Length: 287
Image (cartoon, rainbow, N blue to C red):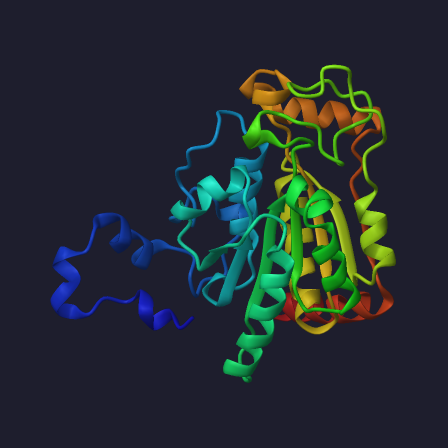
């Protein structure tokens, strides 16, 4: 996308909505802004219809603030709670069928490379745990096997949250949910380790409890996907509605899980990705 399409045709400027005028004047396009500057510029997501205290909504806000180049980024989403927020995101995004988001993203990335051979276009998948680790696992893994240059971000709320709270493969063993009254029978899927073995050049597990850490991991994943290969970020985004905790307790719950060891922040970087990221990060310091 060219930043020129954000500018007004002079004869129409006076009839444009005030919100759009504000996006053009003080949005993140063409500027080096990030999580540290939140509150000082017009964000790509300001309002959403998701539940109070939703870890997914907070994570999505931080993801959008972490994009290294939003003007040339397309997000591919899937059916789930996040799909309810994407119509209000001021960024190119595609809603795919449940589970086929990585297939759509693969084709889109290849098409953009053909259409814009001299520009970098970032394609980022953002989907829940059901679409990523259950229903869509085959297409997710096949995109990794093929070495597609896309980033996959899972919003892991450990349930099928928007359809009544069924257990997912990412739910903790023993978790009791609305449609899992006896508790889940098997452990949480180790998708970060699967991603590493499937060929992802960069893999990270994080949460919105540490915004700057989340930003660093999302940026690293997107940058590495440009040149090295597929990347994966898993973000723990608890759901107060289905797990029955107070909306204001989301961050404290994440920290509790980190302390207990049931949520562990970690990062895997392949040697090739490590070399590439070191070069990029060093160049950034010199700017």
